[in-house]
Image 1 (tube, rainbow, N blue to C red):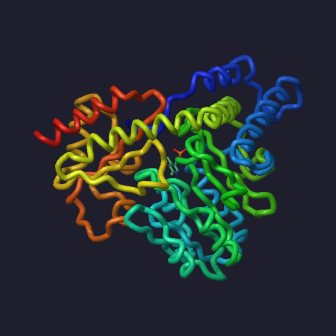
Image 2 (cartoon, rainbow, N blue to C red):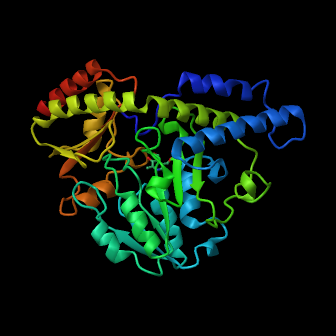
Image 3 (cartoon, rainbow, N blue to C red):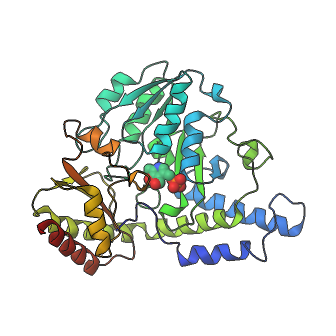
Length: 371
Ligand code: PLP
């Protein structure tokens, strides 16, 4: 029940990857047949990723994952002057990969303007309209929140950003492969994604950078990724990402319908339990995500009890678990609530979950809460 943290590698992605660990191990930069074969495999994957998000292959840059893609987009790479005006507007519910990159910029003098959210975790375009102004160089609002699953009005915010001459970035790590994502429809200049969230391998991601946007190098060295992101390509990872994303898009409608059905069944079971509140948007949200708060419970205790029942769940983002503090996302949604008042629980469904899983998780939660 923690598929927002990561997903199982799709067997077809594994199969596509295997030859690039063994007989087809050549460095794609070489000048011989085996290298050209590796280069062709990377090109194929680049086309698969581009096709999945409505981009051109030349706008797809492979990275080591979502974190790197976010860091690159926010900092602008080493050529930070590429964002000529140094004021950025960011939502309060971003992943730490965006927030920590913003903190680093802030320490160097960039002004950060915060975009608030309502109780459902949605950025309010009216407030964005007031905060984003000429002089803002970059706006970053995620497409789907990794804790509560709320889908953000990215296209509306992008229009505001562009009216003010700012670039628009979206962290689409939780969205790509799960809901339709098209960079032109969203109107974004940069978009981050990560393979391991849709049945691809860990350690590979993509930053989409719209043609014409000037972004600085993220890694210095060789000429890989058009000289912007040096380092020998992770050929097996890239191939796995392309294969997994193509399948995820093909199966999206069926999978989303099934995940939403299971999520609604789970919600129906837990809604009536003592002290339970369901969080996040009820309409615009990820199909497989159910986030609840339970009054007068402790998150760590609840997760430990679920773990003892063989249930893998999370309080919010994996990176924040173990921390006693409430997540920044729930704080932004409910600023009036004291830490420790509620236990937060995120249950995220994946393709291998069944109705029986959902019913047994609900039963276990019911037993724990009643004990
Ligand atoms: N952004 C969001 C919204 C995420 O959920 C995650 C992963 O949890 C990341 C970024 C980081 O991605 P990666 O694990 O590929 O570094």
